[in-house]
Length: 383
Image (tube, rainbow, N blue to C red; front, top):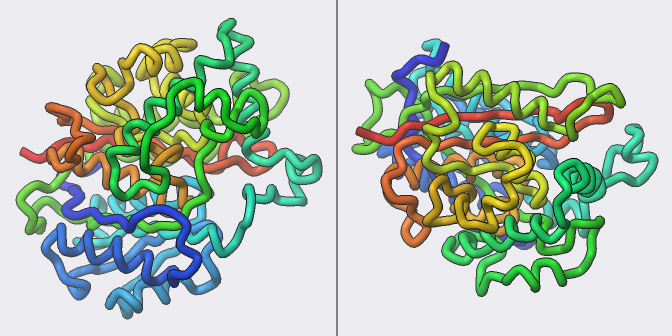
């Protein structure tokens, strides 16, 4: 059971984009310093660190911490695909909830521009890798299945990109800012894996994010955000007997655990940051979380219900589609956005009156598994 006294007292992020000229330590430093300053603590006040990264070089966690003045404390490395940063958050809050540590730091960092020049190459030892089924193609299969099951036109998925790229145009830290595209531009962009077009796929980004997690009794900031619940689920076997698209069961399991622990329902969520590496990802996740009925998520985006100003905004940061997707940092970047929203500090992206926020990150799958990992966290506003 989650201890009610666990709070996030500070968050920070770098800017997101391609930064091959920067050292990975510098990307992380920007996020760590902002989070520590936000929490009103110094490096010496941190008891332990959990750091999420997927493709970081060996020993990167300790080098990053040493560069930010945090050498000498326990540093734990986490790799859980796209959910690496959110698993770091989960472990950090669990350490505080159980009394293992008093004040800890969760960090996520990734520098994809120095590792890949194109899409992430699938593991050659997996069936997907042997057949060249990279993640855009895997998500495209889910998209075609979804459109077929609900009798929808492929164009409906484009409204997710329009919504998120508009929100991203209001986010000065986003990888893809500037003038947001309209639906014709989204659907007319270069085909990647039908029905997904270029503007329905997230960019390969560099960046970092961090959060200070501690007991409410020790928080020095004026507006700590409460961790109402945090659930971490690994995917079960996924094969031809499974009736649902890839990752749906895993997201559902994490959502049930998070809502049950917090004593909340999907209707209680005011704002959410979801894993939208591809437009279909947000659609499937929104429905798996129970935020709307099956077959309706894409149309809700088109109608404005999940857009800024709508009844339950999703991805006001711009999401992965616009803010970017530095794998290890993504979950904590989502967390930072929800903390800013609950504190009323999100500027032009602010969701009025938000008191309960949700973070969901799903880590891409290993062969035969319904996603490596999924974390769903529910956060409550200060006061």
